[in-house]
Image 1 (cartoon, one colour):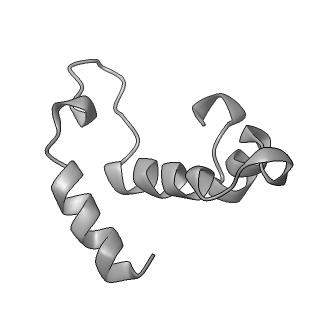
Image 2: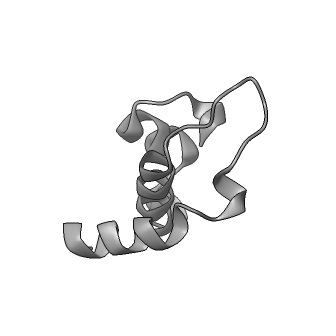
Length: 64
């Protein structure tokens, strides 16, 4: 995915209510959530695990 396509997709998703939170705990930025999701979706089977995605993204295993 090109950076331009990522930005267009991010702009389309950013205002979706699923990314809004009334909690005292802030959500991860939408751009980071999107990047992690796309990275995970781009791999399948034994090629990827949530641990590998977490290591790639620099986030906790439970975050993925």
